[in-house]
Image (cartoon, rainbow, N blue to C red; front, side, top):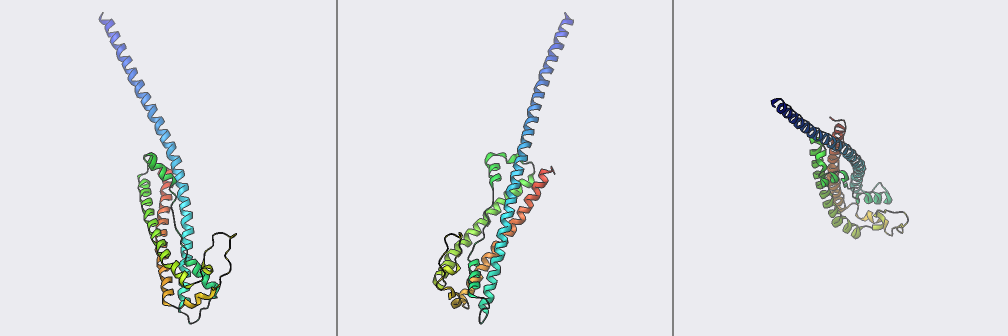
Length: 239
């Protein structure tokens, strides 16, 4: 009787152990599969982030080049304004003014980051330095956009009234399409009447202030962009 009880007891223990092992094994398999799926999704998100930031870098390269050109034109007009007689033609003066009336803006691509934060999948990114850098990047980008918007309003309130009052708008207007060209300007040479004035020089200096501020903002964003790309490379390599 005792032997039978011992056998039954041992069988019960063995069955219990088997059940526990089965549960633990099932849990381990589920965890392993979930970890594998999360790792797969992380790879996808890292690739999407890389695509976004390579695009951001390309946009910033274009905008910084445009801003550098705008700054050069403001300096050209400043120098021409100080001469007794301009050395550039009327067409060249108007071309430089047309350039400084432009805005070069950066609106960051944020598709992948919005998907990550909106879905709650940001936790899938294992690199904490990368997650912190992403948060800092888009916070800094909001500041850049705010600065751009502020400067754009300055242009609206300063440049357009000045052009309407003192220049032939059609001589300095920027065209976006080729199939609807403006007629030739009627008073193309009107820029000569204001070139040597204090107001003209101040207008040029104001645009120099705006353009250099934006250039500084965009260069800082380029540094942040390159840092994100570096961190993405490290994350992809498992570093």
